[in-house]
Image (tube, rainbow, N blue to C red):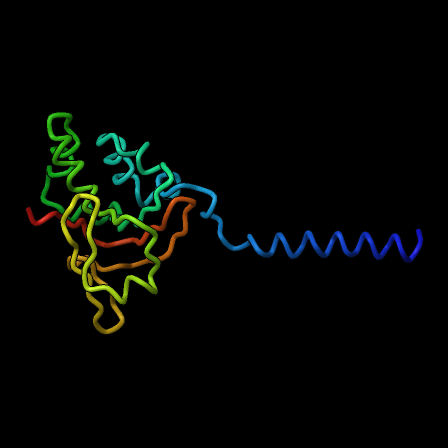
Amino acid sequence: MSYRSLGIICTVFCALLVSRAATAGCGTCDKTVVENAANNADFSTLVAAVKAAGLAETLSGSGPFTVFAPTNAAFEKLPAGTVEKLLKPENKDQLVKVLTYHVVPGKVMAKDVVKLTEAKTVEGSDVTIAVSGGVVTVDNAKVVKTDINSSNGVIHVIDTVILPKK
């Protein structure tokens, strides 16, 4: 093999490494917000609710969406029977209202969320955003993890289910 051939192989190999490095580190970027939530056991209640509300297809669309996603533990903080009641077909409108209150149009990364005092939700109401002592809250729900990048938006994990004021 000639030095020229080795040089060409090295150039191609280096180009592949650089292109791979540019996309490395984001294991969630190629999935939608719904797919990322479905792939995380901590969101099984949220995913079940999204499916029951008929929102899975919408939230799998092009977006972009910012989802303040409550964990299973957040749902467990609700009064006994609340989740079961919301999941009943006759309460679908109320479930949609609660879930869309957790979604803000656009892709709002953590560095931008901390600059806000409120944000308009898909449900139509505003959520209150506050930063105190390095802790970000959305309607008093603590943001416990940020910037789960998705192909159609971003997920920020919250520790409490937030409820529309209306």
